Image (cartoon, rainbow, N blue to C red):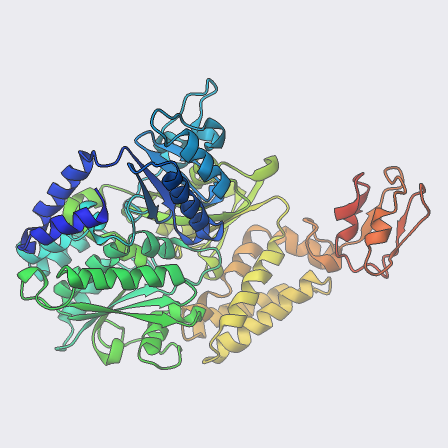
Length: 630
């Protein structure tokens, strides 16, 4: 059933108050759909789009037309999660999982698989979906997916994100119909409180309590805000939800508006997310046309509308008071708390602010009940968590698992382990505000309290994996460079403290560190954590302190031995040519940009350490593995 057919069906249903009945009818019709022989889902999220998935779709549609095939539906979806394999194409009803597609591959699939009587093109399938005997494994059963539980990501990669009819057929807006017809605001808030849902943006504050405080706050005008200013390096959970299922956020914000007594909401999203912004605007217009936003929603007498506000990419605007200032048209700077946004938020009115992933959990809780959600996860961390897994790992992508899932499961069973058989060294969670999890804690149950206990934090869900060749001092320096650059400068502890911490780390990585520098770092970090105005400055020392706690020996070697054990810090390295391996081919000499290498043809060469700038060109061009970093 096409979007147009679904639209016609929905238009025939004048009484939208029975939207849940419509959803059931549409779902049944989709399940019994015979209009199309096959459906082809192609990822249209940012990751696959950057790998030319739109060209794949264009070529696929062109090939189908040339072959005269009119009973195959091509659907542009959101993210499937397995970003390392993009562009991804899945063909139903077989569930054939094609990976790393090109326009040429799309033509091949059309000519061999999508024609009547065609067969799966096994050589283009993701290798893990093919048995040794050549038979195909349903992609849902491969390790990356079978260990997951998708709640927030339930519709991502499943529906056409720009088609509200498909969103309704998949269940969106059923929860809104339920609360407007069967529940009081108090019942809604109690249900969210009973579920144990905690904010997924980093702080982990109980969502239901936040809603309750805002409902109880004095004021005739209140607001609902979505924090989509996802700024952590390596994090893309919120972006993917907005690109794959924007209606789940709109529905949840409307439910919150009804619960707290608000009639207006704002989605604050960074302008660097053009696909997410475009699909949000499309979704808002569609929801208005369907009577699911605006005046008298579902004939209930409740009014609620949502506006999009673009952020300029300031990391500090992920902090709720800075976000509020930016929405109001002011410079994005934090302010002291209290008062908290629940008492004085947007335009000094009581305001609820939750991040995208938190909103994506609301409708499932309303539909399935708080007991269902509370049964997932751990005692104090309920439900699931979406992680953006990146770094030194095979399966880079989005992973949603129950709270309490061991880190080992995420890295090895879902993530496919470390490339080139290297050892796992650490994982950074919480981005610039978090800390590292060393290999000794690889079996840690991933939840709010366990991560805090070892000096890290859940954060918004970025999870960067590091192997044995990673320098932990350099990693700490990387995050300090980020926070020092992103500090708004309003308070001195953050403005000056991040710069001084960065200076000390730079000094250590350049081989100029002194033993007393470690004490200076500890004292400075303590003052920043206790006196910075907002969470940016308060948490900026976390990556440094965490690395010092778990990898103090690396700091010591940088300071005392003037060596970088991982061979990363250039100032502490010397390049050396092994005369027994050197064949005198002269490639290193010819490619050295500063003429630091001498030697005759077919004779061992030598590097002048005084001239060498440690650019690595010699190693890159040596065919005999004769050059080492020491």
